[in-house]
Figure 1 (cartoon, rainbow, N blue to C red):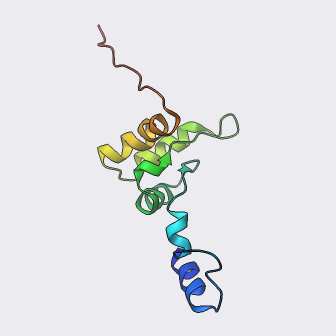
Figure 2 (figure 1 turned 30 degrees about the vertical axis):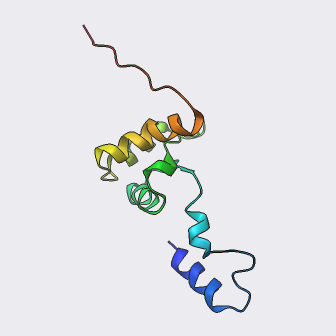
Length: 106
């Protein structure tokens, strides 16, 4: 939420960019993050800022109640593609995992 201010201050202060080739926000967008959070607006902001391809579901188990994290995902108004990426797709891609195959229930 403070990214605009960070970029502004880096731009306006002499030497504020240091050795960066782009504003700090552009470098921060290269990070991967997890959703250990129970506040849906924070999850939405994270996905909007980084994009779903850089956000992974995090549980912080056993210190965090993962059900609360799942509720935050449910309340973040993610479209189906974003939700799938955050819940499993991004981690599968980053860690080279194979998605679980869906077996028909009988």
